[in-house]
Image (cartoon, rainbow over all chains, first blue to last red; front, side):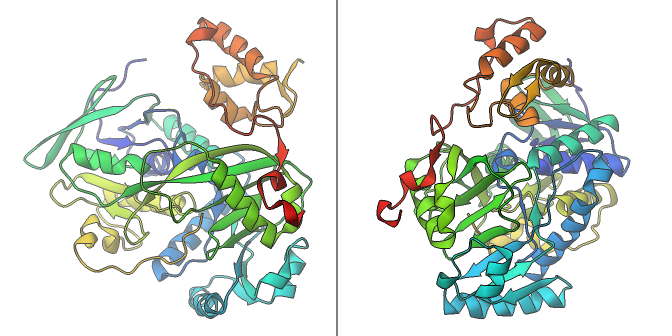
Amino acid sequence: MKMKSKAEVVIIGGGVTGCGVAYNLAKKGLTDVVLVEKNYLASGATGRCGGGIRQQFTTEWNIKLAMESVKKFEKMNEELGIDIEYEQGGYLIIAVDENEVKEFKKNVKLQNKLGLDSKFISPSEAKEIVPYLNEEDILGATFCQSDGHAYPFRVVEGYAKRAEEMGVEINRFTEVKSIKKENGEIKSVMTNRGEIKTNIVVNAAGGYSREIGKMVGVKMPNKPFRHEILATERYKHILDPMIISFKYGIYFSQQRHGEIVGGIGDPDEPSSYNIKSSLKFVERFTSVLGKILPAFKNLNIVRQWAGFYDVTPDAQPILGYTEGVDTLIQANGYSGHGFMVAPKVTELIAELIVDGKTSLPIDELNLKRFEGETVGEAYVVG
Amino acid sequence: MKIVCRCEDVTEEEIIEAIDQGYTTLEELKRHLRVGTGPCQGRTCMKIIEKILAKKLGKNIDELKKTTIRPPLKPVPLYIYGDEDEE
């Protein structure tokens, strides 16, 4: 099939961000859009992530953004005509030292002020939610019932199908080779399948976003970090919430079909494009899992894999115009929580392109913030 | 009705329908239908799926990009990786 040679907007990246922006642009009436993805849709971080959807954050902006996104996830089956396998079993964040207890109580106050249904609970209350929990090693937890998880591949399928129906062209296995610009203005995107003339480019390339920046001479602070993850065999329903610990860097949940999916971050992991699985990861995961839910060490692992967190210095995304190359629109740098905020973020990016303004302010997330001091998101896991 | 993926209960008809919908690589079929994601990890079904896909696309099986083989080779309990004294 021949690709369009001209479009109003070219989106680079076929993950949840790229496909979400395509869908939201088309929904707002802008359908002269071409999306290019070098592999298959959701082949990057979106399709490799744990699918968690959390609203318990520490900055006002992230809490609001996640809450707005949950409102959209709740209506997504109907809106996209696809079952995204959404479950609102909550997120249980365990506190394992006094400092976490203090911080979590403070964060719940901010979250409640913004209308989130999170609460600080005792170890025995946590055990009521998760009967297999080893409550003796925790000092408490925060719980938010409306948090949950979904199947990221279905969300991308839904966005992509609806966008295509409205006229967007989606090209899989199409790799961007270079971007032409003249006097700071984008002129076209060169791919392995030909040139697409355009003035507006959305950089939704996840871990490869900084490479797209380089193509137009824009230096970006994003760094890719490998994060590993595993899945067990299917089991009967034994776990409602996603369980996470920031102290240990672990997260795991039970998916609709019964498999337990989880990961653990490695503070010693260097930035790289290494995407191989390691034995060390499963050993670390199992050792921490044994402290939290000892019985789960008997589950059978069937598969492990890895993906990239696209990490910024303050763990917040990079959104909006690019100084010097104004019509390069950034939508990357999610630092491990891109999937869960995508419904709202991609709507905001579409608003920026079509209306020139957004319904939630995104100015503070502009790329140019890295020239000064920044306040970061503290709740990063995995 | 012919069951191709026994772990995830996926039929030949469902695979053909997915290819017709545009899922034309093994990696995409795996994610769309969950074929090969159960306890056998594709050892039973993937050869059959390769055959079906190659025939539909008019290609040789050798021309298809294979799915990534991921550890472990067969399902094992997690405690094998952990501290044995705790078990």
